[in-house]
Image 1 (tube, chains in turn brown, orange):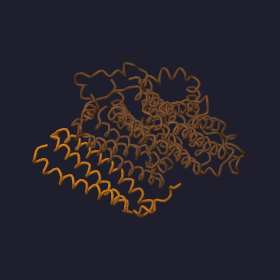
Image 2 (image 1 turned 45 degrees about the horizontal axis):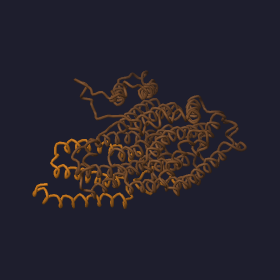
Image 3 (image 1 turned 180 degrees about the vertical axis):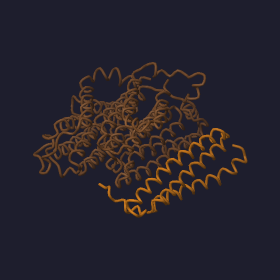
Image 4 (image 1 turned 90 degrees about the horizontal axis):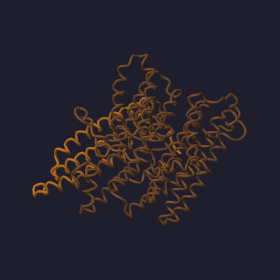
Length: 472
Length: 106
């Protein structure tokens, strides 16, 4: 039944083209319904149970499987697609562009779902490219100058990352001769070619680091995030780079290669560099979305720090932080969209005191900033605490202490952002600004409720959702 | 690996490595958007040949054949999107020079 999550979007994508002009206006509602269906499916045991298909339906039998990790990613994808569509209305105005936008969103949904559920290394590559191609087009859809530039940089980096990953897949095939995860794991375990395996792991991870946009490989990421239209920035920062880069790295390391001491130190090193230098770079930004993009790099560093421990606690913390990052970064991008929609600019030096004019946006962005910087009792605090605890448990005391310091840097740039945009006296020329429309405040409120709710009901959530993830 | 496969293996390998180097060199030194795409194509072709070589050496030709055909289809999609983006950039800048892409920085 798992293939439903890929086949239903595919069917909708094909059927949408037969809609009449009037029906095409409903395209957004269709995609929202799909994301609701996915949220329902994640909690529905009959859909999540992977029974093999029989008869004619077995044509659609991919090697799919879900575990706790995939479920959390499926949930993140559905939430972000839903939020991005709510936000999209003021930013995609033309009727035909809206229709294409909805179609590309479905394609993105399908590609990401495929990457999350597939257990075959080559099918994973195919879904990877589907999701990546959809996101290039989404960035460049309106054919404005800056988004085209951002999309081109993203495309070149992403394709080079793909070349790396494919070379690694070729080397793996040389050893195993089969593409399914189970066969590869078995072949790698008994294989005597340790040099080839190390080479494959290195090339594969380099490709995935490029996709995830961690610090030495981050060149395209701020450009792509900052130039994309607001709903696409939410999508990119929330799930696309997380699924294509971070989730895939986790899946590959956990399922195929297994942890080794050198792999752990690479992950920790990359994570630490990203967490610190991402935060430092965020401090110097004038453009609001660029600041959020660098903040995203820094938070991905945290995720790699938790993951690099290799212990169940570390992996659970990393997954929890992926979810929290999705929620608070989407909320911050929604707030940036509200500010852009009302003031027409994202330049932080030209605005201040907006909180008095935009109370909902101001309040929710404070909540998101505090969650990002790890202030209790909000959701972000717990995942950062777990990451630090996991590092401490493995004996990486210095790394744990530096992670805490980097969290202070997060607080610093978040306060800079709050002070220059929302706090203080109202900047001249912004007196006419009013609170953003329903489409921008509703998603902000939903996400803020999630942040506070997860923070407060943390003991319940950690035992029912987070720890079962690593008990496979 | 049979003896015949071995004799062909190293020249083939060398050719792929040279193709990789040319592709990366092209991507690094060019200031032309179309040439950057050609460099990308060279890299993807090198990977395709690498997969073919792997299939030949491990005698899994049928599997690799299906993989390579899928890879070619995906590559065409990506290059078509890239060409569209380059066309859009050309309409805005009236040039194909990468040095014109300096709007986004920081």
